[in-house]
Length: 120
Picture 1 (cartoon, helix red, strand yellow):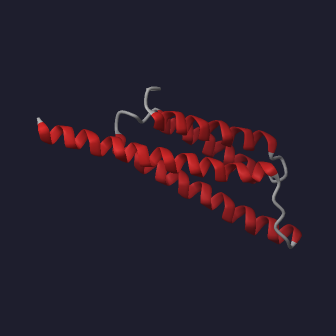
Picture 2: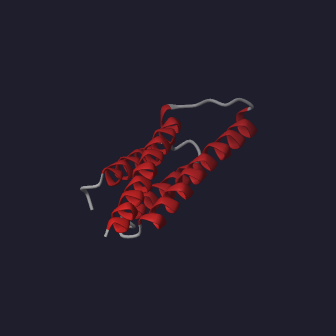
């Protein structure tokens, strides 16, 4: 359902994560992690019929993206001793912002629907 702004936010997060997975070839595990995260983000777009499940799934995606950064810091520190960020490694942070904005809009839609149900 493309009319909803949260769908656009989730699709932008999908594209950003896909670009990150295709460009970041330094750590293959993390590349696979971002590819899986991008596919799950695209799957979240199609959960529009159940807004509460979509909001919960969006929260899970945000947590998984944060775990990406934790794994990146641990892996990079164990290999190099320092944390060196390149531009593809920053893209999941952009996706987190878009997923957060999408989740806020999903919750706002759910509140609107519930308020309209009370009026009927």
